[in-house]
Length: 210
Image 1 (cartoon, rainbow, N blue to C red):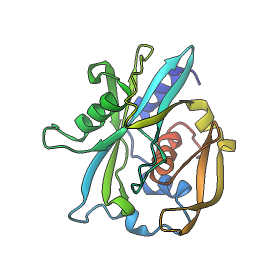
Image 2: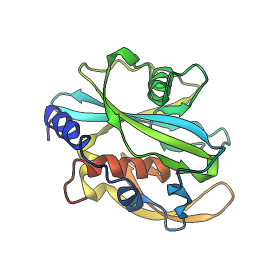
Image 3: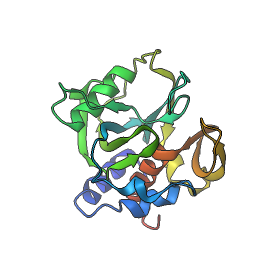
Image 4: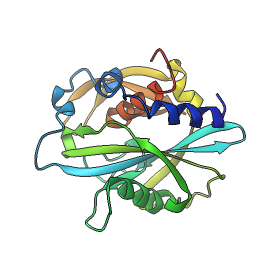
C-alpha cells in the first residue's frame, strides 16, 4: 500500500470499533497479566504516544526512538515518541504532540490527527498510555534531542505489516526475570512490550486477517 491508501484506510477504520485487547494480546509476553487491560484502576500516571505516519517517496514510514539506558524501568528500549501528561497539557493528545516535538522536533501544527487507539496499562511503570495516530503531508525535518533519544529509527510501515517481522525470544528485564516475548524485528532492533502491543493494534487496522 502507498501512503495515500494507508491514510484513507485508517480514516475509515477509526470510524468503526477498534480491536483493542484482542490485537494487544498478539504481541503480549506470555508472562504478562490481565492487569494490562484493567483501565479502571486508580492512582495511575497518564501518558500519550504518537504513531506519526509520514511519506518517504511513495512509501509510508513511522519514527521509533531508542532510549538511552539510564537505568530506568524502560531504559534502552525502543518506543514511540511520547511521555507523561503534564499539568499544562490541554489533553492527552497535546501530551503526545508536545513530547514528539521535544524528542524528535516535529511541530504539532504540522500533524494531521486521525484518532486514538485503545489505552494500554503498563504495570512496571504504572502508566496508562493513550496512543494517538496522525500523519504529515510533508517530508519531516527531524531535530533529535540527543539527551532523550539515543537513536531515531525510521521504520517502513510495510515492514511492520509483513508478518515475517514478528518474532519471539526470551528477554531479560531489569530484575533478572525472563519473559518469553513476541517482538517486531526492525532493522535488527527488538521492539517489544507495550510498544509492540500498541503497534499490533495499529497494524491490525491495515491487515484484514491480523
